[in-house]
View 1: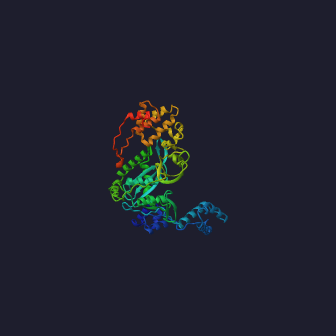
View 2: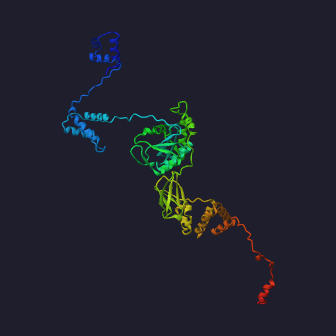
View 3: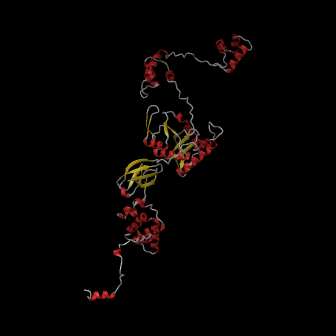
Length: 501
């Protein structure tokens, strides 16, 4: 390939100085044929390109190679031969050339057979309030002094480029629901369409083209918010390119350097603050005179109204153990003891567990994300103490039973006495019936009177209760008293003496 300087010299000598091709070739050392090509093409940039590639070794075997490669195209990817196998097969046919030539030929053949359009994209345009894009990412943070990996849900409004980011410990379906609920509340409204990757938590089956079988519970979420879900084609991340780019940008802008927080709630508060700071100063890519935050303020006014929050849980049936526990993942949660060995419904939220039986809540706990832990509610086991009062001393649910000071003092004194377990069980059972305030006052009075007895505490509770209003009952006329009764001790003495016998 000639340098630009050589081409310039040739053109100057020929057109300005009038030198012949022979003279130019002698002065520059460039062949006359090359000088002719430069002048004939009249181009300022001359590149040498071989018109026909010489293949001295492959030439005799090219027809065999083409037949093999065309036959390979009809096979599945797992059944196709690689370049090494084809090279070895060709050697058995008498080929004596190098492996590199075969590898290069196969690459060019496939490129000509399947022209690649992977680097070409169609620019997308969205109207205000039309669509959002969603994706997950993995990030590293320091949570409670421990460096761990978290899952981050990313929302991106396609028109204003407004972002919402929420961190979770898992990427399960209830986390997906919770992220949508929080995102729509943060945006202050709902959009018409959602663009998703082929998430396992949202899509059960991927068919040819755009056809998808969405998960039933995910469709309930979409129906609740009146959103039309759209799934991207496999390996077509450009269809939700905005949120794909957001993952990279926010990783540098929010999670680098590594974030530190005491809890997941405080971590999410930090993330929202950092995102808002970025979008307040970052210019919108289409409306260069406005920031992302300013464009979102305009888009927010045309979002669809926000309905009541979706009940973002997944529901499973579970059998309660004889110790009044249900298992979720690798952890256990207590329920009311009356439902031991019964099948109940467990609703799993992103942050809590609710157990339902006979249309009522029989257990509610904050969700645990460690393993092999037990969440007890001691009040679930109090009715059992009537038959098994000894469980009060060593029962696992009662180790963390927090009671007011006076009730705790009564417990301490009663457990020193013989049969004090049963007495204190009576006091505990009175708390759900009469309320903690009434029992606390009764214990304070019993301690003041130095009467350490469960029955006395119950008696005080009964006396402290508001009196029952007396209701006058109208009597028939014939029941009315006509003569007022009077007492006469002489009549009693007469009875003793046999006077009225």
